[in-house]
Amino acid sequence: MTEPTDPGDDLAVTSRRRFLREGGALMGGAVLGGLAGSEVSAATENADNLPPNIPEWMKAPGDPMGSQLYGSPSPFEKGVIKNIPKNLPQYFSASGRTPLQDLDGIITPNGLFYERHHGGVPTIDPAQHRLMLHGLVDKPLIFTMDDLRRFPSQSRIHFLECSGNPVYTKPYGKTASDLVGLLSCAEWTGVSLKLVLQEAGLQPGAKWVVAEGADAAGLTRSVPIEKCLDDAMLVYSQNGERLRPQQGYPLRLLLPGFEGNMNVKWLRRLRVATEPTYSREETSKYTDLMPDGTAREFTFYMEAKSIITRPSGGQKLTTPGFHEISGIAWSGHGKISRVDVSVDDGKSWLQAELQEPVLTRALTRFRLPWHWDGQSAVIQSRATDETGYVQPTLAELLAVRGDNSFYHNNAIWPWRVAANGEVTNANA
Amino acid sequence: MRMREFCIVMLAAVAIVNTTLAQAQSRFGIGRPATPAEIAGWNIDIDRDGHNLRAGSGSVSHGREVFDQQCSACHGARGEGGVGDKLVGGQGTLATAKPVKTVGSFWPYAPTLFDYIRRAMPQNAPQSLSNEDVYAVSAYILNLNGLLPADATLDAKTLSAIKMPNRNMFVGDPRPDVKNPNCLTDCGGNK
Image (cartoon, rainbow over the protein chains, first blue to last red):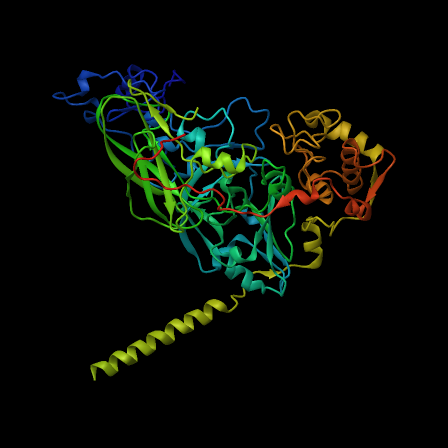
């Protein structure tokens, strides 16, 4: 315990610590079957642990039960962390991205779920938290967290995506996380907002519900009543455990398919109204400026989108031959119906396999087997959702919206695989 | 006989489902009434027409004092921006290659100033300004943008009456607005 920078510092078994030291600067991912992250240095192989020898970790007991009362990833995965921009002027209104290129499947671990805050992360005692429901209701109500957990509950898997993911202008990011890492997916548990609204009784003229967070920004967004009576939820748990503070503990609004900031965290108030509140966030911020100087407001839905996460920017193919192309697709309008992948710079497209379950307004994992011939190639994916909408190219988007609109960029994003196997952003 | 039994079972099942639906639509008796005083204390929403604006008033000159003390460290001495958003200027730039979005050039509704400043500013101590200070800072920011005379004072009525220059430039969501021809073979490639 005298070497605080040793990644094996918390391990009891000395041999592990030696292995970690000899492994050098181990970062997340290490070597993944012919695919390496660019910032990953492979561990120096210790022949003593390789066949035909017996590895050290079989020759002594491992960590005892209770070494970690709340489990954390292997120290060898310490590089798989949130992607937080450096040198921001301030970090109270800022965002941190999910390392999409390091994850498998469709569920984002809670510790890696993307974050966007407008006034920091409040620390809220759930016993002191209240949800007020008022406005055009028969009976204004106040709920405790215990109250809300008494309602019939439901669990559903949905993605959340920040509306500015990514912006339309250069410099474009290097990795999948840089580009679209303000995207995550979880199983959410809570109560249908419709049930809670019915408890108070909606009055005629109820067209919008204004939601307010209990953070230092008092973040406020207006939600159409149709969404509130459809699939909106008041959520208290995420992936089986209570919400993390960064995700709105103890209570958040969930509006499946709607842009992230509308899913108000630390939810404390719902006001039923005839008109939207026209808050700063829904007028001067989350509106999309067009080339003619007009701005689109109330642009709620995140349109169909996909990205190849493996191989993707910052990774390296270490050998020609078989490589599975894998990525994620999603649509705020429903289920993904199809993903096509091109490995020849968009000249031809092949239908990828969709991993079940394919859920509405959730990430869908797609895969395509690929034999890389060792030549330079450009690979990309194109999602189609159940409405028939097809993910556009960046050029197609820019032709209509210009590059000042900032939000709702759902462009196809191509990766260039160089002859040496290095993968980079083909649009950069 | 079997068919009859089957029908009885099905009828019973339908009855159970109906009962369940009826219960789902009934009230659960969860939560307690919110009093008018509780609602008044928490409801700080100000809409675009200024509904729910508070009593009081504030002058441009007082707003300059408050701004210097509470706002200028982040937003610049005269709202030119810094750690915080640029608040002043940019009118006429929105349709250019380098749009400058500020209160003066982009914000459609003046009462939103009161709503946002009151709830979220200053960032290190939100909801600490008095209503008078919020009116005053709103007035000063509008003055810096050439939208209010230097000797003006704002209250609920006068703030609500201000027409912002960009008020009529917001449009609805026309998406889907971009169509990909969805080519599969012999495509032009990514351009």
